Image 1 (cartoon, rainbow, N blue to C red):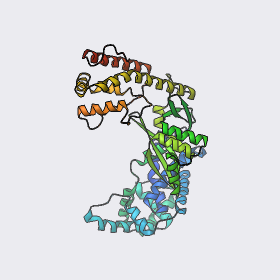
Image 2: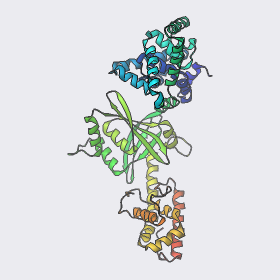
Image 3: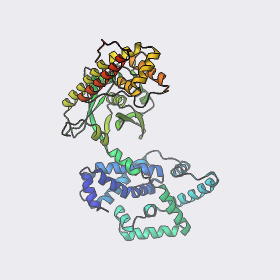
Length: 462
């Protein structure tokens, strides 16, 4: 096991793996200590998580790395005091919350389990504060007397005496039950990942630009890394109005949502870009009410429009920034102006594909059902999917009047697919070579249809 001082030093330099080891080493201790104060498993886990986030942000203030245990305990204590200042649940609510924190037994055992569990929790709560703290820390994960003493900044003899006194108060059978109960209540294996995911959210600053078809919001962090999120016309209008502080006689969609949240005492605290799945960004709204926060999934484009309108913080997960952040051929972060120029080129290339496919789409629309079936048999679904990939970025893919949508619906009808095939997705090409390759394939499809006498030989759409 790596020395704690070295892990702290590595964590100070931004090494999340090192801090993850610290979290794993101290998570049960932080949870147990918080429980000894709050006497509520759910609140204790929340307080422990917040304490790890706060300690990471404050690591630079820790002058002696070996002093981390006691320094961290004081942060946990501070988080618990904040919880205690909030409205506290009744004793009956407290018992119910504790009971819900572990797996429920089968119906036949429920009454007996509940009665036994309440007896154990009552025994823990009845201990004097100092003894309850030591007992919780000792039995929750088998921490040594030395580890507990360093965490509490107390002599080992004091820890020994308090543990001895608590054992005398608890019967031998009760001691075993207390140990089992505390071990069962410990945070799950995902606790560490939750903490690291929160830490890995990088705060960014948005920049809005619109040049031709290249609409987007550029997110830039303190290290100069850039992530560009393309947005639609609706989000463009919302962002534009927010930046210009323009008011509408009647609230538009994003304003209406923010106004509705405010009516119920809910504020937008943060918007996060949390993941990138199959080329699609995933986002979250972090909403706050009376000091409590909840996360709601959203499209990043919607979230960014809301964040800019509400002046809320915007963050991007570190792994998303690393994976999708704009880089030059040498792997270095691109300058904002260079990112915008590249984005414009992508949109221009996509329009080139649209021009290459539009004529073919028009001709396919004129075919009878019988001839269209012949096309599907000759070209294949994947061949027509290539045509669908050329849909202009300005088109609404869901519009029933859209010729590309009509082609997609007709293809499903012929193939018997109730839903679009998983590969039928609109993509924005990222290179000139891709445009050339797709254009060449479209030409092959066109020539095949000409040979079948389904297209006039004189037409040349590519």
